[in-house]
Length: 111
Length: 114
Image (cartoon, rainbow over all chains, first blue to last red; front, side, top):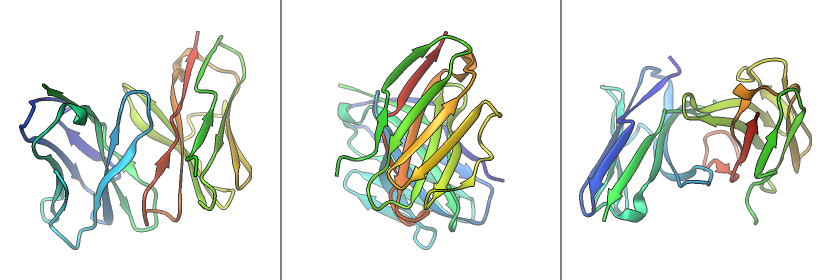
């Protein structure tokens, strides 16, 4: 119930391409869905987050798409750049409870 | 603000030794979290505190692990005795509220137990 399943484990994209990372959850009480970005040797940092009252949120080249009925959410990175190469974690939490993180996706954007 | 500060950044020790990891959260943050990151298990929440009080320690692997937060600006995670399977990167994070905003992570303490 508390799991968040993330795929793919790794992703290689050409510069300028679209990177898509997917997450699925079971707990219908989850109401906060952030994505974190982690560079080697650093701690994760918040990239973008969404709550289930909207189906999409966009910040620059990064978009979260949220499908409440399917209990899935995804991160889209448009015009992917080599500087986007990092590990991405989805996460979810019920109201006033701690986050559960997905297993992470290692993204490599080729120049 | 300097962000969440962790020390040491790297620790190499021998099996059976005591290890103490330290964290200074961001001033004003009322929640503090300890996570462990490994390739096999990803990011695992070990324990978290609210206003210096431990709220949920169900992620602490076993009695060899203990965590304290004696005041709002300092927390420790202790492993005694350490074992090779404890080798991981340990992150401290802090936030204002629970899931009301960003969780700020430190840069981590990489522990290697030989």
